[in-house]
Length: 237
Length: 102
Image (tube, helix red, strand yellow):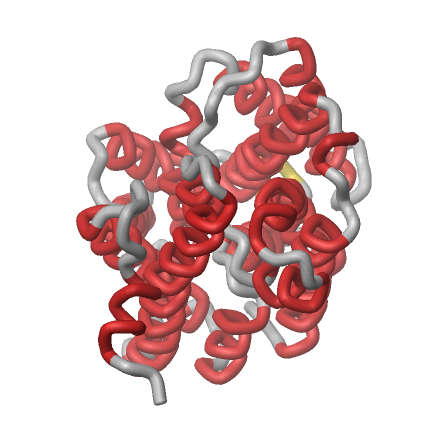
Protein backbone atom coordinates (compact mmCIF):
# COMPACT_ATOMS: atom_id res chain seq x y z
CA UNK A 1 0.00 0.00 0.00
CA UNK A 2 1.44 3.35 -1.07
CA UNK A 3 1.19 6.03 1.59
CA UNK A 4 0.07 9.57 0.81
CA UNK A 5 3.45 10.84 1.98
CA UNK A 6 5.18 8.69 -0.65
CA UNK A 7 2.91 10.07 -3.38
CA UNK A 8 3.76 13.65 -2.39
CA UNK A 9 7.46 12.76 -2.46
CA UNK A 10 7.09 11.41 -6.01
CA UNK A 11 5.22 14.48 -7.21
CA UNK A 12 7.33 17.07 -5.38
CA UNK A 13 10.74 15.54 -4.57
CA UNK A 14 12.31 17.20 -1.53
CA UNK A 15 15.74 18.91 -1.69
CA UNK A 16 15.72 19.39 -5.45
CA UNK A 17 15.43 22.44 -7.74
CA UNK A 18 11.95 21.31 -8.87
CA UNK A 19 9.51 23.71 -7.18
CA UNK A 20 5.78 23.65 -6.62
CA UNK A 21 5.38 26.69 -8.90
CA UNK A 22 7.18 24.93 -11.73
CA UNK A 23 5.02 21.86 -11.22
CA UNK A 24 1.80 23.89 -11.51
CA UNK A 25 3.02 25.91 -14.51
CA UNK A 26 4.03 22.71 -16.30
CA UNK A 27 0.70 21.04 -15.51
CA UNK A 28 -1.37 24.03 -16.61
CA UNK A 29 0.60 24.59 -19.82
CA UNK A 30 0.35 20.96 -20.92
CA UNK A 31 -3.32 20.71 -19.99
CA UNK A 32 -4.24 23.69 -22.18
CA UNK A 33 -2.00 22.61 -25.06
CA UNK A 34 -3.45 19.08 -24.97
CA UNK A 35 -6.99 20.44 -24.85
CA UNK A 36 -6.45 22.94 -27.68
CA UNK A 37 -4.73 20.51 -30.02
CA UNK A 38 -7.32 17.77 -29.45
CA UNK A 39 -10.17 20.21 -30.18
CA UNK A 40 -8.44 21.28 -33.41
CA UNK A 41 -7.96 17.72 -34.65
CA UNK A 42 -11.48 16.58 -33.77
CA UNK A 43 -13.20 19.59 -35.37
CA UNK A 44 -11.14 18.90 -38.52
CA UNK A 45 -12.70 15.42 -38.72
CA UNK A 46 -10.57 13.11 -36.57
CA UNK A 47 -12.74 10.73 -34.54
CA UNK A 48 -12.57 11.35 -30.74
CA UNK A 49 -11.42 7.78 -30.11
CA UNK A 50 -8.54 8.07 -32.59
CA UNK A 51 -7.59 11.39 -30.97
CA UNK A 52 -7.50 9.83 -27.49
CA UNK A 53 -5.42 6.97 -28.93
CA UNK A 54 -3.03 9.54 -30.38
CA UNK A 55 -2.71 11.35 -27.03
CA UNK A 56 -1.47 8.18 -25.31
CA UNK A 57 0.38 6.46 -28.17
CA UNK A 58 2.13 9.34 -29.91
CA UNK A 59 2.47 11.24 -26.61
CA UNK A 60 3.45 14.51 -28.30
CA UNK A 61 1.58 17.26 -30.15
CA UNK A 62 4.05 18.44 -32.79
CA UNK A 63 3.95 15.24 -34.93
CA UNK A 64 0.14 15.27 -35.27
CA UNK A 65 0.04 19.05 -35.84
CA UNK A 66 2.71 18.73 -38.55
CA UNK A 67 0.76 15.88 -40.16
CA UNK A 68 -2.49 17.89 -40.12
CA UNK A 69 -0.83 21.05 -41.46
CA UNK A 70 0.85 19.19 -44.33
CA UNK A 71 -2.23 17.20 -45.36
CA UNK A 72 -4.68 20.13 -44.95
CA UNK A 73 -2.63 22.02 -47.54
CA UNK A 74 -2.99 19.10 -49.95
CA UNK A 75 0.19 17.15 -49.09
CA UNK A 76 0.09 13.35 -49.30
CA UNK A 77 -0.44 11.09 -46.26
CA UNK A 78 3.14 9.81 -46.59
CA UNK A 79 4.69 13.28 -46.60
CA UNK A 80 2.51 14.17 -43.58
CA UNK A 81 3.77 11.14 -41.65
CA UNK A 82 7.33 11.84 -42.70
CA UNK A 83 7.09 15.44 -41.42
CA UNK A 84 5.65 14.12 -38.16
CA UNK A 85 8.61 11.78 -37.68
CA UNK A 86 11.11 14.51 -38.51
CA UNK A 87 9.77 16.98 -35.95
CA UNK A 88 10.12 14.37 -33.20
CA UNK A 89 13.76 13.61 -34.03
CA UNK A 90 14.83 15.73 -31.06
CA UNK A 91 13.28 13.31 -28.58
CA UNK A 92 15.91 10.68 -29.39
CA UNK A 93 18.65 13.05 -28.37
CA UNK A 94 16.83 14.15 -25.20
CA UNK A 95 16.23 10.53 -24.22
CA UNK A 96 19.89 9.71 -24.88
CA UNK A 97 21.01 12.64 -22.73
CA UNK A 98 18.92 11.75 -19.70
CA UNK A 99 18.75 7.93 -19.86
CA UNK A 100 22.21 7.16 -18.39
CA UNK A 101 21.25 9.19 -15.29
CA UNK A 102 17.95 7.39 -14.72
CA UNK A 103 18.26 3.63 -14.29
CA UNK A 104 20.87 1.05 -15.35
CA UNK A 105 18.08 -1.27 -16.52
CA UNK A 106 17.42 -0.93 -20.26
CA UNK A 107 13.80 -2.01 -19.81
CA UNK A 108 13.15 0.81 -17.32
CA UNK A 109 14.90 3.29 -19.63
CA UNK A 110 12.75 2.14 -22.55
CA UNK A 111 9.60 2.85 -20.50
CA UNK A 112 10.91 6.24 -19.30
CA UNK A 113 11.74 7.15 -22.92
CA UNK A 114 8.04 7.32 -23.83
CA UNK A 115 7.75 10.33 -21.50
CA UNK A 116 10.82 12.14 -22.87
CA UNK A 117 9.73 15.72 -23.64
CA UNK A 118 11.68 18.95 -23.68
CA UNK A 119 10.94 20.45 -20.22
CA UNK A 120 11.16 17.34 -18.03
CA UNK A 121 14.56 16.40 -19.47
CA UNK A 122 15.80 19.98 -19.06
CA UNK A 123 14.59 20.15 -15.43
CA UNK A 124 16.14 16.78 -14.54
CA UNK A 125 19.46 17.83 -16.11
CA UNK A 126 19.75 20.77 -13.67
CA UNK A 127 20.36 18.37 -10.79
CA UNK A 128 23.97 17.49 -9.98
CA UNK A 129 23.32 14.09 -8.36
CA UNK A 130 21.97 11.32 -10.59
CA UNK A 131 19.55 10.19 -7.89
CA UNK A 132 18.03 13.70 -7.78
CA UNK A 133 17.90 13.87 -11.58
CA UNK A 134 15.91 10.63 -11.56
CA UNK A 135 13.47 11.91 -8.91
CA UNK A 136 12.94 15.20 -10.79
CA UNK A 137 12.46 13.38 -14.12
CA UNK A 138 9.75 11.21 -12.57
CA UNK A 139 8.04 14.19 -10.89
CA UNK A 140 8.18 16.49 -13.94
CA UNK A 141 6.92 13.64 -16.15
CA UNK A 142 3.94 13.17 -13.81
CA UNK A 143 3.11 16.91 -13.88
CA UNK A 144 3.49 17.02 -17.64
CA UNK A 145 1.92 13.76 -18.87
CA UNK A 146 -1.15 13.46 -16.64
CA UNK A 147 -2.53 16.98 -17.37
CA UNK A 148 -1.72 16.48 -21.08
CA UNK A 149 -3.53 13.14 -21.16
CA UNK A 150 -6.56 14.59 -19.34
CA UNK A 151 -6.59 17.80 -21.42
CA UNK A 152 -6.21 15.85 -24.68
CA UNK A 153 -8.96 13.37 -23.83
CA UNK A 154 -11.28 16.14 -22.65
CA UNK A 155 -10.59 18.16 -25.82
CA UNK A 156 -11.37 15.10 -27.96
CA UNK A 157 -14.78 14.67 -26.33
CA UNK A 158 -15.69 18.38 -26.22
CA UNK A 159 -14.38 19.09 -29.75
CA UNK A 160 -16.75 16.40 -31.01
CA UNK A 161 -19.73 18.31 -29.56
CA UNK A 162 -18.75 21.48 -31.42
CA UNK A 163 -20.01 19.85 -34.61
CA UNK A 164 -19.01 20.95 -38.09
CA UNK A 165 -16.74 23.95 -37.80
CA UNK A 166 -15.41 23.76 -41.33
CA UNK A 167 -16.40 27.30 -42.22
CA UNK A 168 -14.47 28.67 -39.26
CA UNK A 169 -11.06 29.22 -40.82
CA UNK A 170 -9.80 25.88 -39.59
CA UNK A 171 -7.14 25.55 -42.28
CA UNK A 172 -5.27 28.40 -40.58
CA UNK A 173 -5.28 26.89 -37.09
CA UNK A 174 -2.67 24.18 -37.62
CA UNK A 175 0.04 26.55 -38.81
CA UNK A 176 -1.08 29.01 -36.09
CA UNK A 177 -0.72 26.37 -33.35
CA UNK A 178 2.73 25.35 -34.61
CA UNK A 179 3.75 29.01 -34.76
CA UNK A 180 2.68 29.48 -31.11
CA UNK A 181 4.86 26.51 -30.15
CA UNK A 182 8.03 27.66 -31.93
CA UNK A 183 7.67 31.37 -31.18
CA UNK A 184 10.09 31.44 -28.19
CA UNK A 185 12.81 29.95 -30.42
CA UNK A 186 12.36 32.64 -33.08
CA UNK A 187 13.57 35.21 -30.55
CA UNK A 188 16.95 33.44 -30.58
CA UNK A 189 19.34 35.30 -32.90
CA UNK A 190 21.19 32.11 -33.88
CA UNK A 191 18.02 30.21 -34.70
CA UNK A 192 15.97 32.87 -36.54
CA UNK A 193 18.04 32.67 -39.78
CA UNK A 194 17.63 28.87 -39.79
CA UNK A 195 13.86 29.26 -39.50
CA UNK A 196 13.66 31.91 -42.25
CA UNK A 197 15.86 29.95 -44.66
CA UNK A 198 13.81 26.78 -44.06
CA UNK A 199 10.56 28.65 -44.81
CA UNK A 200 11.90 30.28 -48.00
CA UNK A 201 13.47 27.04 -49.30
CA UNK A 202 10.23 25.11 -48.71
CA UNK A 203 8.16 27.68 -50.62
CA UNK A 204 10.70 27.96 -53.44
CA UNK A 205 10.77 24.19 -53.99
CA UNK A 206 7.03 23.61 -53.67
CA UNK A 207 6.01 23.88 -57.31
CA UNK A 208 9.08 22.39 -59.05
CA UNK A 209 9.51 19.32 -56.79
CA UNK A 210 7.37 16.33 -55.74
CA UNK A 211 5.50 16.30 -52.39
CA UNK A 212 7.62 15.79 -49.27
CA UNK A 213 10.81 17.05 -50.95
CA UNK A 214 10.42 20.75 -49.97
CA UNK A 215 10.21 19.95 -46.23
CA UNK A 216 13.08 17.48 -46.46
CA UNK A 217 15.40 19.96 -48.21
CA UNK A 218 14.28 22.79 -45.90
CA UNK A 219 15.30 20.61 -42.93
CA UNK A 220 18.91 20.94 -44.14
CA UNK A 221 18.83 24.55 -42.87
CA UNK A 222 19.42 22.98 -39.43
CA UNK A 223 22.99 22.20 -40.60
CA UNK A 224 23.76 25.91 -40.10
CA UNK A 225 23.63 25.24 -36.35
CA UNK A 226 26.79 23.15 -36.57
CA UNK A 227 29.13 26.15 -36.48
CA UNK A 228 27.29 28.06 -33.80
CA UNK A 229 28.30 28.20 -30.15
CA UNK A 230 26.43 25.92 -27.79
CA UNK A 231 23.66 27.85 -26.14
CA UNK A 232 20.73 26.60 -24.11
CA UNK A 233 17.74 26.60 -26.42
CA UNK A 234 14.12 26.65 -25.42
CA UNK A 235 12.74 23.86 -27.56
CA UNK A 236 9.20 23.27 -28.78
CA UNK A 237 6.75 20.83 -27.28
CA UNK B 1 -7.57 14.16 -40.47
CA UNK B 2 -5.98 11.56 -38.23
CA UNK B 3 -6.92 7.90 -38.69
CA UNK B 4 -5.82 4.83 -36.72
CA UNK B 5 -3.20 3.94 -39.33
CA UNK B 6 -1.75 7.48 -39.28
CA UNK B 7 -1.70 7.51 -35.46
CA UNK B 8 0.02 4.10 -35.33
CA UNK B 9 2.58 5.16 -37.95
CA UNK B 10 3.35 8.39 -36.08
CA UNK B 11 3.44 6.60 -32.70
CA UNK B 12 5.83 3.98 -34.08
CA UNK B 13 8.24 6.58 -35.48
CA UNK B 14 8.14 8.84 -32.43
CA UNK B 15 8.59 6.02 -29.90
CA UNK B 16 11.32 4.35 -31.97
CA UNK B 17 13.35 7.57 -31.86
CA UNK B 18 12.83 7.97 -28.11
CA UNK B 19 13.68 4.33 -27.36
CA UNK B 20 16.76 4.25 -29.61
CA UNK B 21 18.01 7.36 -27.81
CA UNK B 22 17.34 5.96 -24.34
CA UNK B 23 18.70 2.48 -24.90
CA UNK B 24 21.32 2.57 -27.64
CA UNK B 25 22.89 6.01 -28.04
CA UNK B 26 25.96 6.83 -26.00
CA UNK B 27 25.87 10.61 -25.58
CA UNK B 28 29.64 10.71 -24.98
CA UNK B 29 30.05 9.80 -28.63
CA UNK B 30 27.63 12.37 -30.07
CA UNK B 31 29.56 15.51 -31.03
CA UNK B 32 28.37 18.95 -29.89
CA UNK B 33 27.88 20.00 -33.50
CA UNK B 34 25.61 17.05 -34.25
CA UNK B 35 23.67 17.71 -31.05
CA UNK B 36 23.11 21.35 -32.08
CA UNK B 37 21.98 20.34 -35.56
CA UNK B 38 19.53 17.80 -34.12
CA UNK B 39 18.08 20.33 -31.71
CA UNK B 40 17.67 22.93 -34.50
CA UNK B 41 16.05 20.36 -36.83
CA UNK B 42 12.48 20.59 -35.43
CA UNK B 43 12.53 24.38 -35.79
CA UNK B 44 13.58 24.17 -39.46
CA UNK B 45 10.91 21.56 -40.20
CA UNK B 46 8.16 23.33 -38.28
CA UNK B 47 8.81 26.68 -40.00
CA UNK B 48 8.86 24.92 -43.40
CA UNK B 49 5.56 23.21 -42.58
CA UNK B 50 4.05 26.50 -41.33
CA UNK B 51 5.13 28.30 -44.53
CA UNK B 52 3.64 25.61 -46.78
CA UNK B 53 0.43 25.30 -44.78
CA UNK B 54 -0.02 29.08 -44.91
CA UNK B 55 0.89 29.85 -48.51
CA UNK B 56 -0.03 26.79 -50.55
CA UNK B 57 -2.94 24.61 -51.63
CA UNK B 58 -2.53 21.23 -53.35
CA UNK B 59 1.09 21.82 -54.26
CA UNK B 60 0.59 25.34 -55.69
CA UNK B 61 1.53 28.62 -54.07
CA UNK B 62 -1.57 30.53 -53.04
CA UNK B 63 -2.12 33.73 -51.11
CA UNK B 64 -5.53 33.78 -49.43
CA UNK B 65 -7.30 34.52 -46.13
CA UNK B 66 -5.09 32.00 -44.27
CA UNK B 67 -2.10 34.32 -44.58
CA UNK B 68 -3.98 36.98 -42.60
CA UNK B 69 -5.06 34.46 -39.99
CA UNK B 70 -1.51 33.20 -39.49
CA UNK B 71 -0.17 36.78 -39.45
CA UNK B 72 -2.67 37.55 -36.66
CA UNK B 73 -1.46 34.42 -34.86
CA UNK B 74 2.10 35.70 -35.09
CA UNK B 75 1.08 38.99 -33.46
CA UNK B 76 -0.76 37.05 -30.75
CA UNK B 77 2.27 34.84 -30.05
CA UNK B 78 4.51 37.91 -30.02
CA UNK B 79 2.19 39.50 -27.40
CA UNK B 80 2.61 36.26 -25.44
CA UNK B 81 -1.07 35.36 -25.50
CA UNK B 82 -1.75 31.70 -24.63
CA UNK B 83 -1.90 29.13 -27.42
CA UNK B 84 -5.67 28.73 -27.07
CA UNK B 85 -6.20 32.45 -27.74
CA UNK B 86 -3.72 32.35 -30.63
CA UNK B 87 -5.56 29.62 -32.53
CA UNK B 88 -8.97 31.23 -31.94
CA UNK B 89 -7.67 34.54 -33.28
CA UNK B 90 -6.22 32.78 -36.34
CA UNK B 91 -9.50 31.00 -37.06
CA UNK B 92 -11.61 34.13 -36.48
CA UNK B 93 -9.47 36.38 -38.70
CA UNK B 94 -9.35 33.79 -41.49
CA UNK B 95 -13.11 33.20 -41.36
CA UNK B 96 -13.97 36.93 -41.28
CA UNK B 97 -11.75 37.76 -44.23
CA UNK B 98 -13.19 34.81 -46.14
CA UNK B 99 -16.75 35.88 -45.27
CA UNK B 100 -15.99 39.44 -46.41
CA UNK B 101 -14.89 37.94 -49.73
CA UNK B 102 -11.53 39.71 -49.77
